[in-house]
Structures are given as C-alpha cells and as structure tokens.
Image (cartoon, rainbow, N blue to C red; front, top):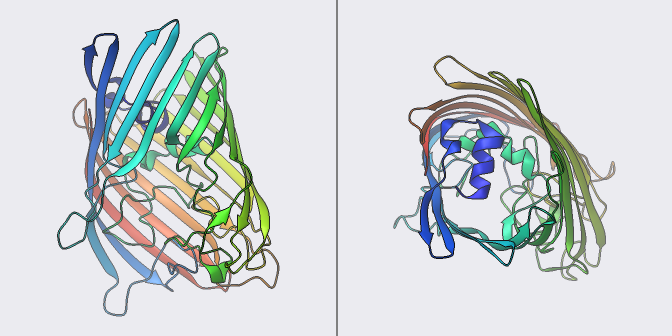
Length: 413
C-alpha cells in the first residue's frame, strides 16, 4: 500500500483491518511494483443557521441557509481523495530506491458534462536511502509540518467539515482542516529522514515556497482582508521539519511529535500590501495513545503570519502586519464489540486581529464537533457514518453554524 495511505489508515486514523494489506503486488525483474489506492463516496445533508460567515473575505467554514432554503445535499468524496497510486521499489548497490506517482480522481463534480473536476496530482517523488543512514526524498508529497495532525484525524476516513457548508461540488471535504489544524498540503520538497533510533525519528526539508501565499481561495484570503491577489516573491525555500518518538509498553502504544515551518513572503508591487515582507513561523505538538480498545489524540499549534485553514491564508493585514493564530483538537475513540469504532472529536482554529484597527470582518474562530462510526464490513471495505457541527465566529460579533450528517463507504486496495 502507498506509504501515505498506509500511514493514514494504519497508524493515524482507525487501525481498521484494511490497513494491514498492501495493494496489488507485481514482481518485475529487479523491481517490485505496488498498485494501490482507495475509492470513497458519501451522501451528505447540510443544514445552516445564523449569519452567513462563509464569504471569501471572511474565512468562515460554516454557512447560513439562504433566503429560500437552509438545507443542501450532495454526493462527495470525503477528506481523503479517491486514490490510484503506483509505487516501485528496488535495492541496488546497497541502496533502497523507491518512486511513487499517484492520481486522485474524485466523484465530486456538479458540471453539466460531469467531467470538470480534473484528477489531482498530489504525489510524484523518488526516494533513496538505507536504514543505516536514513533516506532522501525529492519530489511532491505531503508537507512535513502538520502532516501528523491530519494523519491522526479520524475524519480522514470520513467527511468532517464541508468547507463553507457546501454539500456538493468540492474536490474533497475538509475534515479537521481549519477546525483544529492547518492543512499540511502537497508540496514540492527535498527532505532527509533519519534512521529510526529506537522509536525516535526526524525529518528536515526544503519546500517549494510558492505554496499559495497571497492567493484568493474560498477559505478566506482576499486583498481587502490583507492578502495579495497577484504573484509573490520569496528569496529562499520554505523550511519544514518534524521529530517524533513512537513507543510500546505492554498494552500501551503511542507516538509524540513536534513539527514546524518557516517561510519568507514578499508580495507583488501591484498588491494591496505592496512591497511588504514578512516571515511565517508556525509550530505544533501532538500525541496519540492507544490502550486496548481505547484511543486518544491531542494536538496544538501556534503561529505568526501562518493564518488559518490553509498555510498563509489571512496571515497578515492590509499593511503587512502579521496576525497570530492557534488551535488544536482532542479526539477519543473506542472499538465496540462489533469492531465498529466510535469516535468523538472537538477542534478549534483561532485567528487574532493584528491590531485593534485591523478589519473586523475576518474570521475569529472555526469550531468543530464530530461524532463518527467507522465499521469494517470486510477486510478492505469500511462503512462510515458521521455527524459534524461547525460554528464560525467573526470578529465583528456575527456567527454562523451548520450541521451535517454523512453516510458512505471507503474501499482500500
């Protein structure tokens, strides 16, 4: 099974039976090829109430009902995109060599022709190394900072927040992104990972710095709220790193991690914050513990200029002054006698104003409560039912709330 999917399923989310199985293994001379992936789809109904906080200039993830209707429905891919991956591995000259290329075709398309959502390209990398000295990765893969936050989120096998309350048409849903952690995203990178020293391991890397800082997105970046809408320039690569310690003692297993990121950002001269330059810094701390049928995850992050939901989104005001942000989530799970995993999670992402004169229409906080049931119907097929309550508060005092119920399935191979 593709490494990221294996992490997402095995160590991070639910430890369901599907996690123990690789994909379709094909011996090919000196190479071993692995064709792997997942297909998932969810029917979701969303009901909104309160003030509309999902406008692009605000950054809210909950939305009110419209004047004529307060409910929407749709069939969507969940947080984890449907996946088709190709991985090849070999060992030559005492070096382990691996490549991965994957595509993520989704089911979420509301166009008349039904083919507007093109496949996403989230992975294309080569790595090489040895257990004695570590490994080097070059290419596009999940970001280093905040990766463990999303991989430990139980909604990775489900839906979580929809994103603005929309129930149909998005490429994927948000899960806990923006309601507990900042999205790790998929980034061009050159990264080094140490050997595993009795459970301790670290990764450091440089990343493509042009990750969307200052871009207009549906999650709340706009020129009027302090983000550039044209090209940006950065004089160095992004820097990201993490360290983790995994342990096992009798019936208790767990993992503790820290990670961080730093980016230099300079806006284009035609942008609303023309000529301003600032440095994004952000760090996090998390832990996952499992004892018998119980599991618990705790996570916290804090940053300056890092914004909310998407790294850099709404990170500065119109004068280039940085906004502080923080948040985290708590999650508890229990495996019932039927092997169904019951999960309860609470998450929040906060964004402060830079000064008392900063615009008051930006988002103040996005909160999420998730109740989920995840049942392994077969070794590869899991049924999922989720309820998500999202509340968004704006600095001017307005707020909105949306509740969503989802039923669906996810199949790994």
